[in-house]
Structures are given as C-alpha cells and as structure tokens.
Length: 358
Ligand SMILES: *Cc1c(COP(=O)(O)O)cnc(C)c1O
Image 1: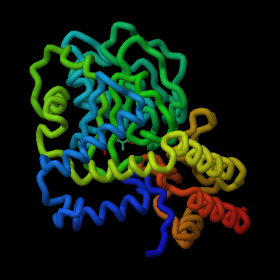
Image 2 (image 1 turned 180 degrees about the vertical axis):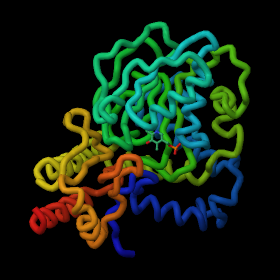
Image 3 (image 1 turned 30 degrees about the horizontal axis):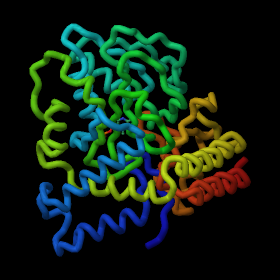
C-alpha cells in the first residue's frame, strides 16, 4: 500500500500496527475463531478489553480512587449536553470559557439546561488566542474549558486553577503530553482525534461531583447509571473501545506521555518554524504560547496561489491539510500517530513551492 502523509483533523491518523491488529481482531479475536464484532460485550474476552482500556486511561491521567472511566456513544457533542445535565443544579450556575466552535456548542446546550455564564471569550479576534487572567466565580457548579481548539489552532498550555470542579473537553489533545488529571473533576474526549476511531467518547469523572442536581434523570443521560452498569448499561461501542485500547497500549509501549510529548514538540517546532520562515505562508495564531501542537493553522500570503500549492502537496502524497470549512486556509493536524517524516514531507513541499513562486 502506498504511504500517504495523513494530516486529517478527525477522524485522524492511527498507528499502522494498531490498524493491523484491529483488522486481525475483526476476523479472529483472541484466537476464538470469532470476530470481535460478533461476540457478546459481556463475554470475558471483551470484559478484559473494557477493564484494560479503563485502567490505561486512569494510568495515563494519573487518577486513582474515586475516579470512574466510561466509554459512551454520541460523540463529544453528546457530552456538551450530559455535562450540564449531570452537574448544573436547577438553581445553580455554570461558567464557560469560549475558545471556539466546540466551546460555543457546549455553551448552547448548557444554556438550555440552566444559568450559564461565559466568563471569558476569544471571539473578538476570531478565536485566535487563549483568554487569560479571567476571574472564575467561586459559587458556580463547575467551570468548562476546551483544552485544544481543533478548528482555530489554539491550545491551553496551562489550565486555570479553581476551587470549583473543572470540566475539560480534551477531544483533540488527549494523551498528547503529560497532564495531571487531578486538576480536573471531569474530562471527556471523542476518540477519533487522538486515540481511536469515531464512535466512542471517553469520560473520566470524579464520582463525588455527581448526584447533586436534584434533576429527574433520564437513564442514558445519567453518568451514575453508566457507572453502575460498568460502562455497559447499554451495548457499548465495542470496536472503537478495542481500538482505543490498542492505541493506548501502543502509546505506553513506546514510552508513554513523556515520549509522545517530545515527538509532538519536535513536529510542532518543525511545522511552525517553516510557517514563520516561509514568505508565502503565515500562521493564524500570532502568540506562539497559544499555538496548538496538534492543529497548526496557516494561510497563504498570496491566496491566489492556493490552487498551485494544492496541486503540489497532493502530488507529494499529502492528505487532509485544507482548513476547516468555516475558516478556510490550511490546517496540518499533528496527532500522536503522525510521524515526524510526514511533517518533513510537508515542509519540503512548502520550501519547493517558495522557490518556484516567491
Ligand atoms: C471534534 C471535536 C468535538 C466534536 O466531537 P464529536 O465526536 O463529533 O461530537 C468536540 N470538541 C472538540 C474539541 C473537538 O475537536
């Protein structure tokens, strides 16, 4: 198979060996002579998959007793609703930081369920920076933040300290570097950006924050129901969970979060150095501190040359660098499984392009 440099923003690239193992399990799982896709989720072989996946998540987040890990359907978008539904009291309030499209969608859902305050926003400058120095209300039920802004290419390099529970949407930078999970009360992430295929969303939650809303709860929307059911209240997304387990095994085997942070920093440096150096390109996030190590967004200084550039990178077997449909330009997603050599291939094209057109 020809190797394509896959910069897709999501679903994103997965390690080749993980794809091979996942393909094998679709034919013959655990030497059962049965496919992973045709056995009971309550079989002991699959129970082992769930257990290992949850343990790997807890280990990588550094969280212990009192934390529960779930794998739910509905995508990260379902969590936009489940978070306020489970945490926002009828007469309480929620605080949100608005750093882009995903945060805005989370805010929209919370507003339907209760009193929701946007305490900081970067909307005034097209979400091109991370707001800082804002005050967090001490009486809010929780603070909601988005660690990485997949569309606008910004990333929180540190997290707000707060006495209230902090909820973080980590969909697009989960497990890209060491992060102490204990500074949060709830972390969620759709699997398809950095740890698996679409279809499973990881939720890690400190159990003591649940059950305080006095809301009458719908079962499928209630974290406690899913916890009680061992993340099998209903049939869980078995295949995505299996691939998450394989990806986290791959991560751990290669050296874990310290290792991947080094790899990701090297890729981001190579990418941004070229964006800043090359006269035909410029970054859309100005402050280097706010630039995402996962999604590098940039535009052309001469946009009329875009069709020529597009021809050139496509000819170099590069895929998926057009920007999000709402913002245009380009976006190179540098998720964990993308090798440094793929970034080098893109940088080579940008340099060849500059030689020809600058
Ligand atoms: C992709 C993304 C989402 C939406 O995920 P779905 O699984 O499609 O619902 C939410 N938040 C962030 C930060 C994302 O990158």
